[in-house]
Length: 356
Image (cartoon, rainbow, N blue to C red; front, side, top):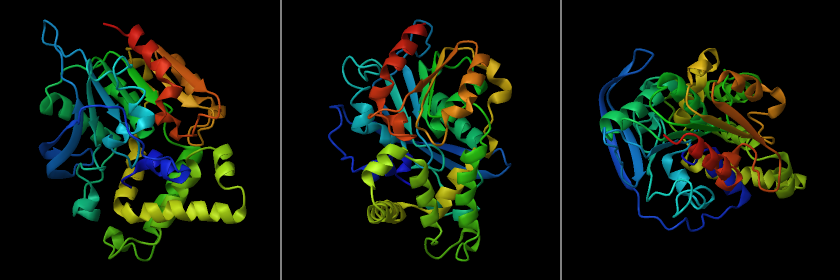
């Protein structure tokens, strides 16, 4: 699941990996946490968290870092996805909202993803069962212990990263100046969102070749996982445009699945989908004290606006505001979270409202 939801969506839509905004090559590194203990009680002798950074941290007279921005990716993604043109070209350049000449931008690969420690590294089914709170703990320690960051100007994230953003506001309410969750809702995963995850989980675990996660080759059910991701991404209008006939629909779906199974891993997918089991920020939303702007789109099949969850729960966030962007020729369903031009004005307004 190396590409993540948006990367797979980009493949299906034929979006070229065009030249990104002219930036210096990000610094890359690995922070290694010794004897990391998971919420399950399991542990790893060493947990690796891979990261990329732009810019330099700037401290005030009291030594507090004032320009750090943590950006969190979605399920199956990694920090490198934010270097794509549809994100970087509208955010990181000179004079743009997150100009890397001014901000210290941190793009990490979450636990279980990218170049960070994950099941497919070798442990496979023996890898500890991680959850969202384990991922956030690893990220918090990356910032504070690994990078020496004692405060963040902004924490923002897409999809799973958006869900993490809500939890950051509750678990570390004094750590940041502002929060921007994208393509998420602040409530336990349920309804269709849970159902599509269960389809993936049940298909993998019920596959005769699964063998408890110690399969000899990628199990055929990995295709089911890819098909479900295809189903839930993009929006109905774009899907109809790219696949207007039965034959074309089959061809587009097959191309998506074929690309996915070349690099995907069934254990990585299963762990990543199951990691959301502990997500439920709803009981303590009042703990979030900093300005927060949550942005969703009307064509998001994973977080459909007709449920009214975001609009209802945002009232409990003291300085929170919700934005639902309407369906347009520019939106991309759930994947709209990484099309920065759709919501960059909201980011600018949030940064202004949260200026220390």
